[in-house]
Amino acid sequence: MPFLHVSRDSLRSPRRVGAAAAALLALALAACGNKDAAPAGGGAPGAGGGGAPAPEVGVVVATPGEVGLVTELPGRLEASRVSQVRARAAGILNKRLFKEGSDVKAGQPLFAIDPAPYEAAMRSAQASVARSEANAAQAKALAERYRPLVEANAVSKQEYANAVASWKAAEADVAAGRAAVTTARINLGYATVTAPISGRIGRALVTEGALVGQGEATPLATIQQIDPLYVNFTQSASEALRLRRAFEAGTLKRSGEGAASVKILLEDGSEYAQPGRLLFTDLSVDETTGQVTLRAEVPNPRGDLLPGLYVRVRMEQAQASNAIAVPQQAVTRTEQGDTVTVVGADGKLSQRSVKITAGQNNRWIVTDGLKEGEQVMVDGFQKLQMLPPGTPVKAVPWKAPGSAPAAPAPAPAAPKQ
Image (tube, rainbow, N blue to C red; front, side, top):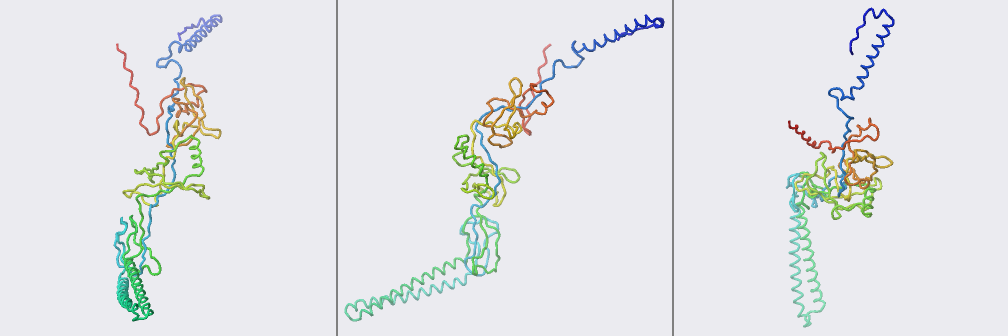
């Protein structure tokens, strides 16, 4: 503001005082006018020209395709075959012939029971057979000697009939004795307890010196076949019915040739390397839980999985055609329906009602309501809360948390002088 000098003489005159005050007021108004007009003339140094830039929002491009519908369910592993090793012969256990926790083969000896009583029984049966064979030979010789004599009426027919009957009875004694020998041999074989199946055997349930098989078949050990393993899991009956109706209506199609692929997730969250296959779905529904039981078979060649282990089963039961997968945070779910926000080519936002089929991997599967190439807003909703409705935005590709950031755009080259 320019400096105005007022002398004492001028202040003494009222007319001069009024003129000076008027001059001061004019200068103040001129200074205020210059401040208001400054931005129009290019602005203060360092201030940007034009309006505020459009806010950036993260979007994904709708891309239809074949999307597998994966269901994750809790399950528990079970041995494909389980056999209890029992003592079928009574006696004192002499020796254990296996290492606890090892793999055994079918027919491998596991326990030895004192065989002495059974060996003696077999020798007695063999002796009885020898005596019966001798009696049968004597009876046969007598009957054959009587045959020509009865024709010559040298002996009576009754005597000949008695000789033939004695011969047949002796042969029957021989057959009974041989059966007794077979029984004694079987009992002697039971003295050596063998593995009924191949698998992994647990700990021994008895020790040497124990009396086993007295009155009942004493359990000795348990063998479990763990390659392959079964995994039993349950699914909601309503979900199974919904899938079946979707198959019939053609909305979904079956995954593979009618058999769903199965993957096992361990307790630490890692995925088991060997894929499994679905064996069957139970025909009945549990009345207390409303669940349907399913069973899958999983290879276990190295024995990494153990029976009774709790796992998560990830199963692809169906595939959706022309479906679009969008992040779950892009969808607003209410009782009135599901909606997404679409960014137009002009940067304007619009709400769109969509149809959700299922969810997987933090994404919703959209089967209706979106078109190919549309930009669905995923991130940046907080920026729009303080802006008036209808404010245009700038769409930028959305990056999922944890993914590699996009490479920065190269800086523009400096203009040549």
